[in-house]
Length: 186
Length: 91
Image 1 (cartoon, one colour):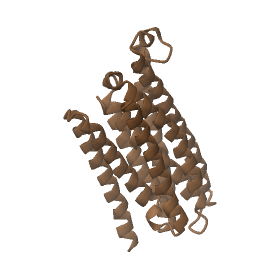
Image 2 (tube, chains in turn green, blue):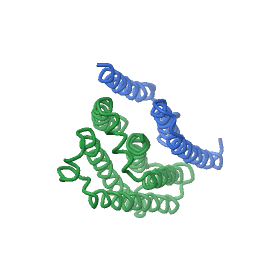
Image 3 (cartoon, rainbow over the protein chains, first blue to last red):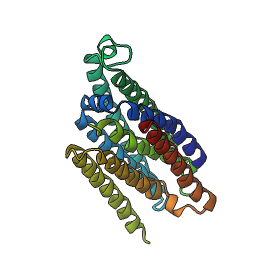
Image 4 (cartoon, rainbow over the protein chains, first blue to last red):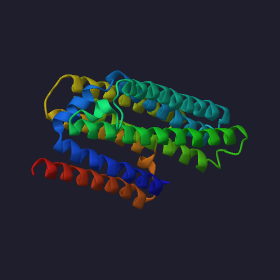
């Protein structure tokens, strides 16, 4: 599982590298682009994801240390719920950007300085790829949840639960870096 | 440690993560200049270290190779990105 996690980190690592390069070239435009993001939405989503990581960790704890499947099921359901809340906030955020014409190839954005076009291109690519990971993570956790309910996941056989939750933590770790780099540089 | 204290440890880590988020948002609002990016990145690194060590259980990982591999891989990536940034910046 750790090797898979590392490969995922490298996927995002490549994008972070691209971000670092373009940011070094266009610091003022990145600053201007960041001003247009909602810091409130970003902070709210950070708190949602951090809390979802807590409930995910407690789901593993409830099975591995307490042997209480029911509790694990509730914690997993809460984690999936937080994931859904994250996506709802993200949808509103993206919708607001589209309303203002700030999406790739839009006439409004194309008229902006080169660096701002790059900033929003990276913003949509990286938060989009991250949102895709949130959706995949929720799907994985939903499958694990159904197995917990069917008693296929037990204290002795909990590897699938642990790995699914590790994937969810990875999604959280990536967001921990996306948040300051896109929302907090203005 | 008892089960109970393990539960509390998860809660404490979560509180630390939320507090760090508060600090990073406040710092970003203070307009401290170019040092600001270093501060928010240091806080992000601290937060992800907490998640990796205690939520993803890297602190209690028994396989030494894995325990070393993860920080080395992430450290190497950080060096790549840092060097590229300073290279483009000083060109």
